[in-house]
Amino acid sequence: MRWSGQTVGAQQADALPELVDTAALARRSALERSGLVRTVRPPEFAGITFHEVLAKSALNRVPGGGGSLPFGHTVNPYRGCTHACVYCFARPTHAYLDLDTGEGFDREIVVKVNVAEVLARELRRPSWSRDPVALGTNTDPYQRAEGRYGLMPGIITALTESGTPLSILTKGTLLRRDLPLLARAREHVPVELSMSIAIYDDALQQSLEPGTPSTEARLATITAAAAAGFAPSVLMMPVLPDLTDTRAHLDTAFERIRAAGARSVMASALHLKPGVREWYLAWLEREHPALVPRYRELYAGGPHPPAGYRSWLAERVRDARRRHGLGSRPLDPATGTVAAGAPLRTRALAADPSGPHRGVRRGMPADASAAASPPATSPGMLF
Image (cartoon, rainbow, N blue to C red; front, side, top):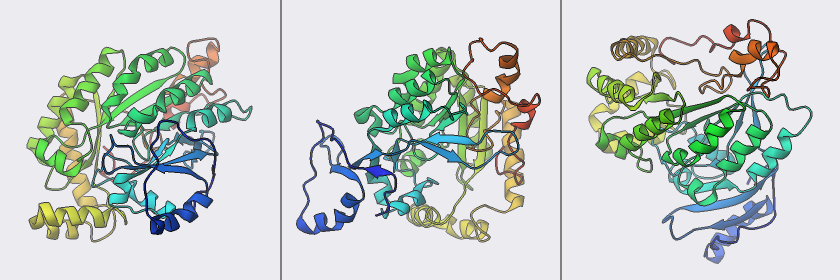
């Protein structure tokens, strides 16, 4: 197993040891030698296995941007995700750990139990320049495991105390637990919140995202975030050809997003890279076999549908956005999530270094806010 950057250490007291046979122990021996603390199967998480590890590092540098712009950074407290979204782009990351990218991704969750402590140590380094940090770029930080392990409050606190801007993207309604903490963090650093809500048909949503909160529950979380003083965004990603790209579905989606209190929405077409493609097409064969030829045609040229479809969908989304009075938000060019706002505040900070966002990175060029716009993409890739 390639568990680079992991070390063995203390255990969590309330975890229940996994009961395995001798053959299973032999299969896990390489993983244990590589730094696993232990594997547990808590009774309240039927069918779910947690691999608890001690991380050596927490901050992940994401190549992107360029020139004088900072690189993006992410923090991922979990690997794998019990949301079990069939289309999840992060599935191939489980292969790096020699874990299954199908049901294994949904049911074998790697938990970095010491991530907050490691992050706080990294943020205290003199070299840390307080670049914005994105949470939720790989697997969801507010998936069900967060209710057991409670890693996010420590992460949010570490980022806030270091003066580091942050953005969160989630499908998890457990975000509401941390809204008071995030509101206090916002007094010191820029904080951006986004909710991923791609499907506005209940039956389809449960089929494709069986482990997620309902669409209604996520919209209610948007309302709660807006009531707490945030300007939450909705990411309608992915839009699924012939399933969620109809005018009726888009109108329903944008109407409900607006009513929930969001004022901006971004969307993009389904992306089927290897490792995701096979899992999604297997679902399609079971649930909508008549659509399989259409998808094989659309994705014959690679992970993205052709430019013609993307342009058609982009115009349809723009039209729906105009009808419902919704805007769009700039995305971080490095992480692909809603920008945490640091570049937009840099000139004000230079004029008043003691202001409320005094921890934000200094020394950005005068035109940083313009330069921080997302890089150009193919038509319909993001709109």
